Length: 571
Image (cartoon, rainbow, N blue to C red; front, side, top):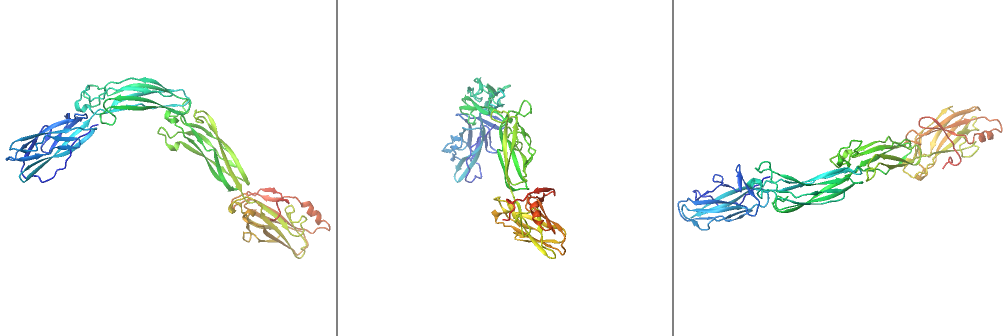
């Protein structure tokens, strides 16, 4: 690295029409008023070695005005350049004034500075702005001690060589390998730490790459330390201490004590797995997504590339799958870490699970992640568990019959609604529908929608609705009691003109067990009008008590749903 020195002073005043002085000197170019300073020069560039003495050049200024009494000036210090020896008196005709320009740079680098030589004669002032250029050079130490990374628990060993190199350019000043332009001999010591062994030695002078000596010695190994992998993830730092008398690392060519850390690290992958995931509260019959995250938070990839067999620097294992209320396929784990230049995108992965409850209530499931390595700081195999949880809420269908001819009062008589005393007239029954759910959740999660109501069979039966939160001609909605719900009334009318038996079916489709308004449970009731023999009505009522309502699920399959006194009374 080369740098340049120079001195700067702004010129002022007017230039005379006729020359008063003529300036000459070694390495001075009159045409451009530039002066090259340096212990040596090459290709028009001067190189000044950084030391207390600096470098000087002399310049001569001659009175060429043809008359006596030319006054001259310009002494002073300008940055790291000092100008001295300029006479403060007048110069006679053809007399010369020699003065000195000295640069004492303090750090490596390039300088290009200016100062002004002033001459006066009568009313004429002549100013010559002179630019001084140089490059300050010096030896400069660079010390390296590469880190050693080994897999924890592997018992492997690795070495770090302490190397001192002269990365400066001091030899540009003299190109002598024995001169102080070389980096000084170094005294080296070391302090060991856990896992480290080895020793160091002193080194001699080191040239830089600009030396003209054949095959210059520019670097030297001061010692080698050996690190042994520890049983757990940890970092163990030894120190390498170097004392030099010149060539400091800051480029100022001073003495320096340099302490270099020597890093030994027992590294390993390290697993971080979600310990608990909650789907929150959802409506039975709907789904919620859960993402189980596995991350490699370790540093094992600093030890090298994973080969999947003897060298496991990646985190490896598998996430188990699950069926039932919580569904997911799991999958393999093969994750790098973010150290050693690994991309962050490869350090973590998510595994998708779906919470799909079909009934109200809380549910949980444990998912096991099996780890081949990275389960602990000792890089062992092991497992992690993740608890998946969620709560399902929703409506619960309830119904009761309020009317005559029912032997058990307001309890549904086995899914059959009886009609009587309607010969050549009308008979009316009321099916009271309620939402029996006691779930504490919002209406969209707990409201019961009767998505459709219809009667099939004989045309002797018809119905009308009353008391629902919202309703149309053939459907209605009921909130549970926690949300202010009450029973809705399906009024069923039977009309006949002849005393003959008659039967139809009342079908109520609901969103129980499904999303709000979606296809859920279906309930079917028999609507029966008979002409019984005397004394058989009571037998009919008692015999049918306790039979099941026909309940179809959303796929149309019939399921038995028993209505009892405990859960079917109108509310």
